[in-house]
Image (cartoon, rainbow, N blue to C red):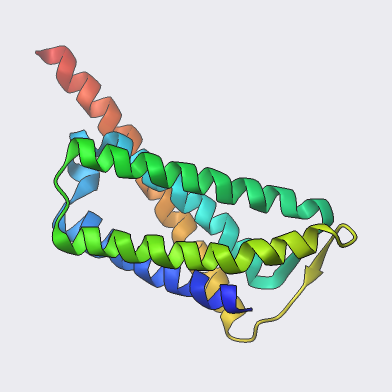
Length: 172
């Protein structure tokens, strides 16, 4: 259950990062140079939506743990790639670097708590077991919906920016 609290904190920190740093300060969805970064953000947000929805009301026993493990591994790889892309394409503010540090530390804590749980679940008979975390379950599902919609938005922005930079480049 503690991993759920860290996951909710990750949602709050991630929401701040997106709204304050990416949208308000940097206006990434309007920057052609941010096309790849927006696509990476969108893909990661869609993965987080899966995690939020999956853990909001279920325990994933047996072979059902495999998709969650894979999602977590892919999310980590995308995060590493995002760090590289950000460093190559723009200068991050102190607030954004600090937010990313907090997201990384909290993400590590939630993984440190979740991985042993998934490891225990893998040895149980394969089933999706309904679970209720009280108010935390609808909060996780709500964050899942928000992150799902924002993920599609960021993916579309990244594709639009890629298309506009190609069109812009062909006029030169």
